[in-house]
Amino acid sequence: MSDALPDETRLAAEIDRLKAEFPKTRELYREVCALLFFRFGVTPTANRLYQLVKRGSMSTPTQVLGEFWAELREKSRVRIAHPDLPADLGEAAGELVATLWTRASAAAAGSLDVLRDEVELRRIEAQQSVVVARDELGRVETALEQRTAALLAAQVEVRELDKAQAEEHAARQTGEAEIGRLKDEVVARDRELTKVREGFSRDLEKLRESAERAEERLRASEKRALLEIDRERGAAAKLQKELDEATKRADRREADHRSVVEGLQAQLGDARHQGGVLQGRLDAVEAANVTLQQQLAAARGDDARPARAKAAPARPTAAPALTRALRSAATPGRSRRASATPASPATEDKPVVRRKRG
Image 1: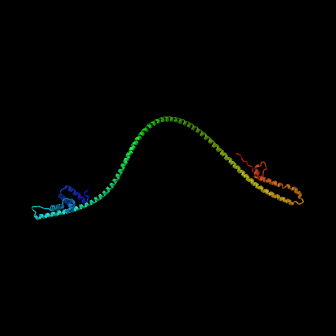
Image 2: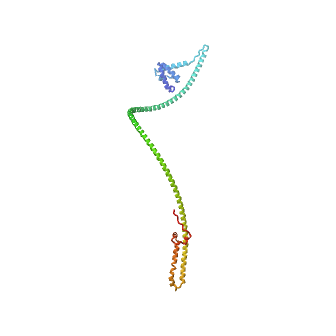
């Protein structure tokens, strides 16, 4: 987690740790110089050291810094001691080794820079993670506050439930007492119910016996009813047969009546025809009679008129009598009284058909 913190924060943490490990001021300054140069890659200065440590006077970090650079140069110098090598060759070899060490240090510093860049990227990612974590922490705190409020509400509800439970306990005790009383009542009612069941069983047995007797009477009544129905069916069949026969007789009578009516209608037509013929003849006879009378009156002289006038009234009376006879013969209704009046020529040609009575 310390790698993810900013450099200043990590540096302050390391200095606090060094202050606890090195109580002496000069040793503390020397360790801070090494920390800045080797750990953080920062060139230490006297002011920087004093700002970080804040111990002693201003000369103390200056002296410690000079000793640090001298010791660093002395340690960076390489000496190659060999008895067979000349002095100048030994110095050249030492310079070569120093150069190699310097280049190696530069390469290490480059690697350290790359590592620092990676650490910086990780630090930035860590900062973003910290921001996200802070947001998440805010949400968690909000949820925690909500849950705290819910917990308080739940505590209030629990208190109310405890109160309700106490009330329910009292009510339960009252209910148990009521249940005991009801159980006693149930026992008493069970006893009464047992008595009622016994009486009901006896009554039920009596009702069964009555029902059996009623069923027997019902069966007998059904048998009698079936017999009555059979007799009624026979009588109905007989009546239906008689009705069919009466219908047939009525049909025959209707046919006979229809034939009689048709015959009477034919006779009526014939009688009307004969009446028309007779009426024509009567008209011709009357005309001839008038003509004869006129001729007779013209043929007689004026001298014989008084004698003929006395004898003439007997002849004209014959013509009206003949006319009445012809008209009575032409009347259709008089053909029915043929036995009382003389038969006319029309009635003598066809017999009178009498209507039959059923």
